[in-house]
Amino acid sequence: SGRLAPRQTVIAGPVDAVDAIVAEVAAAGGFARRVNMEVASHTALMDPILDELHSELDELRPRRPRIDFFSTVTPGTTPTADADYWVANVRQPVSLAEAVGAAALENATFVEISPHPMLTQAVAETLENTDALHNVIGTLIRDGDDTVSFHTAVSAAATTRPALHSTRSSAPGTARKI
Image (cartoon, rainbow, N blue to C red; front, side):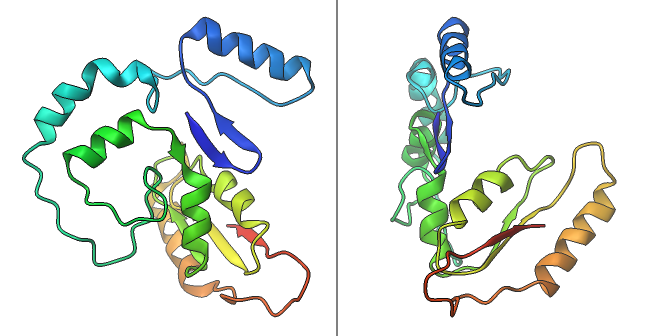
């Protein structure tokens, strides 16, 4: 579960409870759909595995990142990616909108590295109300040619650079989804 963007929230839980919420949102004229997942990450349904997960990850000895790391678990901090962090990541709601908002203060290009980018829309929506211009790029496309998709994304990241700070006084920034 979590807050992905200003107008996007993800919920997770038992199928019947999720179906009831989807039906209620649809009845009110909103958009909602159920995504079939194997586990309900970021919810209390993960609690039974947390001790074992922590035990398995306890030997991690992470180093401080050399590039900015904007956590969706602990927005506003640079966490140590140790066992405690990963257990919290599995259990706590995702705060994608907050992490993207923080990153947008200093970064103009957002790249989702995934075999099927699903969050580029949420990232672009979050960036719509900023005072800067941004690009949002996905790396691969499901059932597409990975080489072509990846090279297209690298080209877009290298050649399409928006101004970091907009000179417009009242119009919100734009986020171009590439």
